Length: 207
Ligand SMILES: Cc1cn([C@H]2C[C@H](O)[C@@H](COP(=O)(O)OP(=O)(O)OP(=O)(O)O)O2)c(=O)[nH]c1=O
Image 1: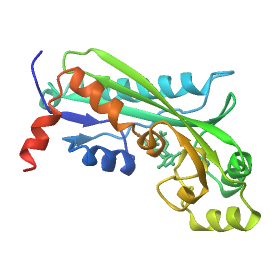
Image 2: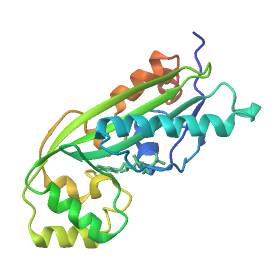
Image 3: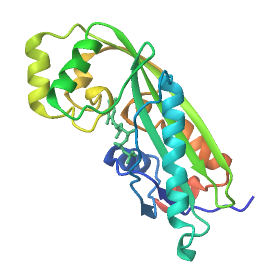
């Protein structure tokens, strides 16, 4: 297996770029992929995260197929879904949707699923789905209204960002924290290195 460290991140999420940077990984190219993120009828949140992360990676592969400069790159994508029971809560577009999501999450446990997909330079597709359980405190109307006014819910699955003010809502978290922020680092780095992406070369170069 030839070691390489050329990487396309099929994402427009600044959180994913930051998380990768934390692990010493700087993508050579960012390719945000616009796909339809509507859940299929009775699709489980875990299956949704799996399917959407795969669709983002495959869309990036299709987009670069005729570009010789991007041959030999790994493609990495992810999709994060918040769920209460079997119900998926995606990224609210309007403030009333974000408000509904926060009232739903208040005082109870929910799950965050992130699907991670890697396509290797030789075309092999590998996936993992990571689950984190998060319990929120019971949120008062004042807390919800102030949080909505902060705007930090925008573009975030479940209408909150654990890395911001909403970190103060978390009573308990079981599993990967980085998974909630949008990219589970342990599993992502494991997936990449397992397929020959040489992450440790980046660490040596950072000396
Ligand atoms: C729950 C949670 C989600 N998020 C973010 C991570 C993701 O960016 C977003 C979930 O939406 P995604 O559809 O997974 O990702 P995205 O549209 O932002 O980016 P792309 O598809 O281009 O990769 O929610 C946080 O930043 N903090 C949190 O606590």
